[in-house]
Length: 560
Image 1 (cartoon, one colour):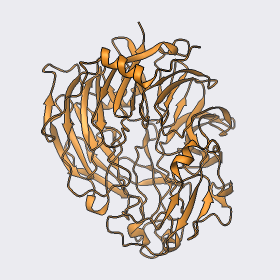
Image 2: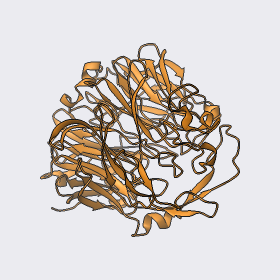
Image 3: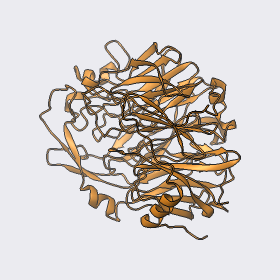
Image 4: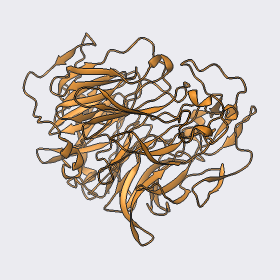
C-alpha cells in the first residue's frame, strides 16, 4: 500500500491553511475557567453502568485504557487495514507546553477532555477541535517531582471529571463548565508525593495512586467518595509493623521505601478485584540498607475495592536494585490456558520478562523474556528470578540489560481479542548501574543511592539497541512479529477491530500496522515526539483517531 510521509513543512502549511480558526484560547487568569463557546454542550454524563459496559460504547473512550480490562482495544472498524492509508489530519490544536505531552483523552458523546502538563484541563469538540473551556489548577509553590510536570488524563462519573495534581490533590470539576466542585489532599508535596496518572472510577469511588518513588516516600493507594471527596480507604504499598510482609524490609527502611503507585490500574467487575502496579523500592540502586524482598515494591496488587484489603500479590522483581517499576498497565483477558479457560493477567514487565498470571488468585503460570536481558538466568516455577551473579550496582558501575527505562514502562500495551495477540513497544537497551555508599536524608529530595547512566543520544540512535512493536502470543510470550522503531520509542499502542495497530515514534511519526502481520500500512510525520497513547472514537457515524505529539493534539479521519 502507498505510504504517506508528509514533511514538517508540508504538514505545517496544510494545517495552517485549513485550521487557522482552531487556535487554543488560554485564560489570562490561570485560576479561572474560560467559556469559549457559549452554548450547551452535547453531553448527558456517564453512569457506572456505562463504565461497566464501555465495550458496548465504542463511539466513546470512557477511561484511561478505554475499558476496565486495560486492553486499549476498540471495536470500531470503519478505519481498517484496507483503507487506513486514506487517513488525513482533520484538526490539530497547539498548546504552549514546557513538558512532555502525555495525555490520553476521554471522549463522551462528541466531547473530548484532555489534560496538559502543569495540571491544565481542556474540553474540546471532538469533531472540530474547537474549545469549550479550559482550566488551570493552581499548584502549591513547592513541588518535588521526578520526571517533569506531566499529567496523563482524567476519569469521569456522571457529569464530574476527576483529576490528580502535581501537588498531590484530587480535584472534581463540572464537565460542562470546568468549575471546581471539590478538592481534597491525597499526599504531601513537601515529601515528594505527587499525582501524574489518571484516576480510575469504580462504582461510586475514585481511586488514585501516588508518585514519588525517588523521593523517599512510603507509597499508597487511596479511594475517595465520588460525590463528596471523602477518603474511604488508604492502603500503603509498604507493610507497616505487624502487617504481613513488614519483615521484608531491614530496620526502619520501610518508612522511606518508595514503592509508589504512579500509573492507572485495571478492574475485573466479575471478581470485584482492583489490580494496581507498584513501583521500585527506595533508594533505587543501593539495596544494602533495605535487605529483603521489599514487599510490595515491584508487585501487582489485587485489592478489594470496597475496603482496600490486599487479596493477593505477585512480585516481579524482589529486592529490585535497577529501578524496574512494575507500574505497567495490567492487561486482563479471558483465554484458554493449557486446555482450561482461565481469567488471565498479561504483563510485559519493565524487567524484560513477560508474565502470565491467574488474576483470580495470583497463581503464577508463565514467564519468558520478551526483550534482551542479562540479569536473570530464568524465572523459576514459583515465578521468582534466578539471578546471574555480579549484576548488582557497584561503585565502579555494571552494564546490565535492560536499561533504567526498562524493556517496557508506563506506555500502554494493547491486546486484540480479534487477533489474540498482545502488542508491546519494547526496548532492548542497557546502561551502567552504579551505587553510592553515602545517602542523603530522605527529605523530599532525590533519595536514589546511585545512578543508571547511559549516553542517551547514542543509546537511542545506536542500532544495536533495538526498539520495536512486538506482537506476542499471550499464553507463551512467543514473538509472532515485530516492527522496528528507531530511534527508541515511548509511545503507547492502540488496536482495533479494523485489524490495525496504531503507535508513534520519538521523532514524530504516527504509524498504522496490520494487526496480524506487522506490515506498515501508513505513516505520517507529525513533527513532534509521540510520548502518549492514541485513542479512537466516533462522532456522527465517523471514526477518528487522536494522538498527542510534540506540543499539539492531532485528530485524524478518513478522507471523504
